[in-house]
Each structure stands twice: as C-alpha cells, then as structure tokens.
Image 1: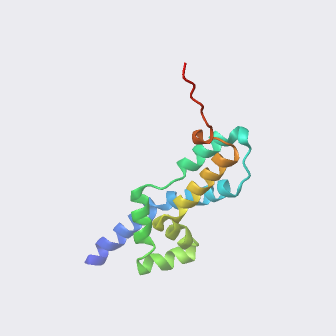
Image 2: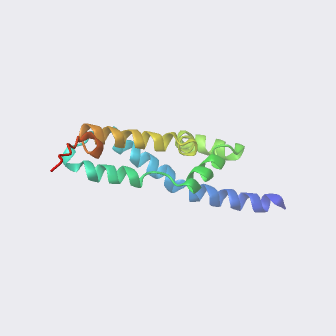
Image 3: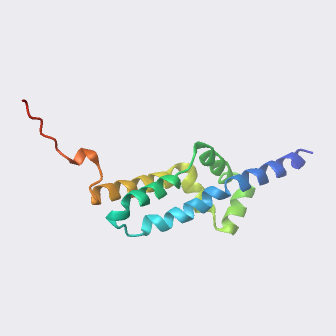
Length: 119
C-alpha cells in the first residue's frame, strides 16, 4: 500500500527537477564559452537565469540520495548534475564565471576610483 504512494511521489519529484538538470547542461556550455565584452551583460544575465532555486536544490538532493533514484540517475547520466545542483557546486561555478566576466571586462563599479574634490 505504501508503495502505491511512494512511486507516484518519486516520479513527480524526478519530473519536477528535470528542468534544473537541463539548465545545468545549458549553463555548462555558457561557462566554457569565450565571452566578448560587448555581449558581457547579456552573457551574465543568461548565467543568472541558469541558477537553481532552493526548491530545486532540495529536490535534486533527495533525488541523488534515494537508492532507486541513484540507479536511475546513473543510467540516465544525470547523477553528477543532480549532485552538483544539490550541493551548490553548480551555483558556485556560475558565480565564478560571472565574477571572471566582470573582472575581465571591467564591469565592476568598485574597480573605479573616484576622487572627491572639495569646492
């Protein structure tokens, strides 16, 4: 009787976090891509949109811990993506790339030194 409830719930969880895995794959392409500074703001916005939500981290964490989900994720080749999403390693990679773009293209406001002149 419990299995009748567990299976649909696990299927629902797995389907709900599939979009996060797909975004992880798309973001990996953006992370490895060279950036033209003229398009830096668009690239940063794209990377920001690939970040995961707390719900996605939680769902992927559960999906990467359950024995049945582990087997399914390994077969589908999604285990490393789900683990990276759940642990936050994925978001830290995205943040690192954003930081690299900002420093390479000098987009950070704090890089500018402002001289105050008293009149």
